[in-house]
Length: 108
Picture 1 (tube, rainbow, N blue to C red):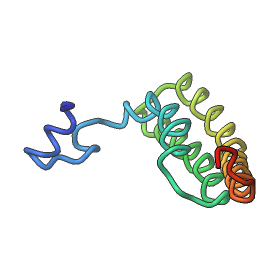
Picture 2 (tube, rainbow, N blue to C red):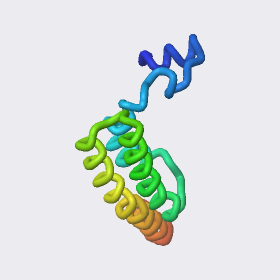
Picture 3 (cartoon, rainbow, N blue to C red):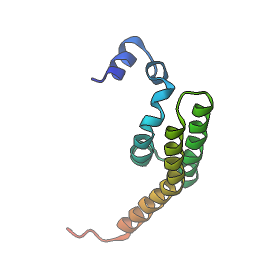
């Protein structure tokens, strides 16, 4: 069991109470490239917005002096890429699903 899970289960602490804003950008790659693709069911529009909102969050974190300029540049680049690639990944998944649905089973 992770430290976060123990703190959440036994002390009812939420993620933001355990981890500060300085941890957000360090985990952005995993959030956008794993969680958003594999765990979130969303429209192409919402997936595109995830990149836009992430970029705004990174800039806000810099304004509040939680992160440095280097982290923000990297996060903004990743967010811009996500705004393009997340909707494309959703389109591809939909096309593959439709293709597989209409193809006869090969093993039958």
